[in-house]
Image (cartoon, rainbow, N blue to C red; front, side, top):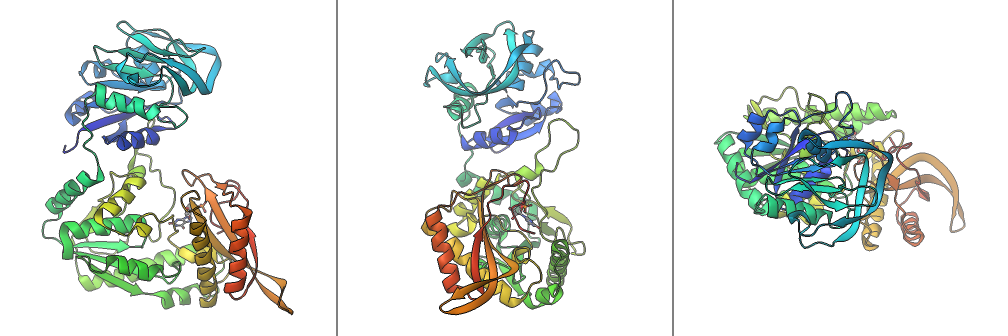
Length: 511
Ligand code: XMP
């Protein structure tokens, strides 16, 4: 292991990924693993610290996840959070009881700042609680180091054994100084040095790829999205011209996007192949109105084009996949690794490309780390900070059938929308925003003439996981400016509407 490691044992809590992200933000490399991981395996991994996550159960519930007591005897510091805290207390001989009332939300909490966990922090502040059970009797050797009105042991410690428990959630922003508490645990209790940064990671990642790939050939499908672009950049730095990246331009990208991707890789040590397949895609999509059919056609067409190009190169040894860490995190409660994937990617894996092995250079990274890595590698900021863009592209943002004229209308309108959001300084506050060309035409007046043109819809959402979303509260004056510019500058649009639906019930995309 080239980095010090913090292991996060997954008990199925809703904030598990957040804990991992926070730990990494503290400059410490961590991995989320199943709570069922055998002690021998944990020993072998040689972590410098262990965190137990929260979980949905009560420690008394039938089938409540347990932990082998031996884990507390390894001499490795442990921090239990919420369920993890109660489990630690119960396993070590304390008592966990059910309170009459659930303690939930922002809670005034007092901290013992003599404890290493709270060293240098306020002695009283807000924490985020979400529990019904509480520790009514401490295990031997432990003392309470925090309390709230209704929770006598909001945090516990056995400083000699470096065992700590927190009833509340330090990983959630509502807990004032929560990150500092995690940092205290990592640095002051476990002795982490903070050796996880993208700057350091680049070198180890490059060395790993070189060791694995040797002098073999690598093939990569570049979509222009963040993940595949960063993967391409990393591979280029590692093994240069051994990599061929095939960028299938289906003609349904945002305005100028194809050229931007090409420009971003100009001068990189890589075989960059851009295939302009827009005519072919447009042919296949002619007259197709059903959203799922559009997706299928684009997916299979994409693979066909990719495979045809790949054949020109001949057999390759490695095919790159842009899998990132949230896709590989195991779930806490079942035996199988739950693949938490927000959406299907275009095409999936080509079946007929001749390759020996898959290589996943981003599989340990969270999305924000992928972006940071991209910047570190020297990709343009605009490219790595891109909002999500669906694989099928503008095809699912043109309602009904698609033609070149509609693609061009949508590209122009979408460009103005994005430009004005950036001008208003809102691009970091709105997580995804785009224009949709409806297939409805309405009557309007322009000059003295009657018009009968398309309705264009604007969609902007705020979200953390894209599974649920709220519509973005874009100020009226910004919307007004966008609407005026679109009507004036884009032909065939005479009406602009703003989508004010949340997800659910609506999805983010219109198709
Ligand atoms: P929905 O519309 O399902 O979108 O609320 C959630 C997120 O997924 C993206 N999305 C897709 N991404 N292929 C993709 O790669 C698709 O077919 C697809 N459909 C939706 C969408 O842009 C949003 O970020």
